[in-house]
Image 1 (cartoon, rainbow, N blue to C red):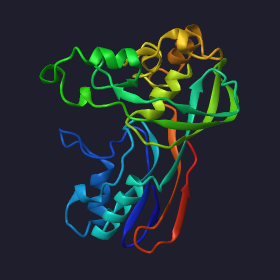
Image 2 (image 1 turned 30 degrees about the vertical axis):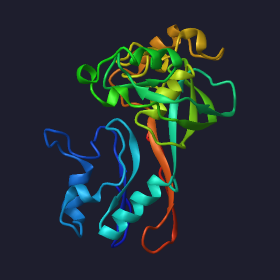
Image 3 (image 1 turned 90 degrees about the horizontal axis):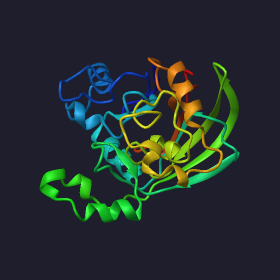
Length: 259
């Protein structure tokens, strides 16, 4: 669904299960569909991309149609002048009505290519690793990462406690929302990577003892994972606000979550 378009930018509501940009196999993607419909001043599909959403995340994505828009949007993202809010269902009832998750992230040397919370212990472990064996990205310094959350409602999903949160990504790191939610003991419903029995490190890489008291129990997480098996992950890029990169008009868009 196209939410906004002018000669410089296009804002689209991406469905879950669709790639933002083509993968190595040149799979169908939102980028390709937008390029074929609108084209770009540069004549290049990749020169429309200013940010992306994961394949399993639905919601608002901005594409640039002109070179001026591309430069302007890249500058806005780089200087954190774009406000993005997400809506997510997480396992368990989050006790605090609002809060901030301030946990640095690092590449996971045990479960590549995923991310985890960086701790002193994990940083010490990196000293023993060889760059040629694990790759340069694994040895990058930890990235400061901050997510603000607010509880919209505390709900029931097939008899299991879940919470609907508004998440604001302050730093916009790779997989930040997934890791941060897991690290406070409330993984995103339907997250098969960072959630219960997922492919990445459990609890965002933290020890069980480091999780808050209101964490969702393993039994609850397992029940929710079973109930949501085969269904899309419950995270949606609900709103985005920024100053138009060319006209300088203040813009704000919002679309409802599909869950």
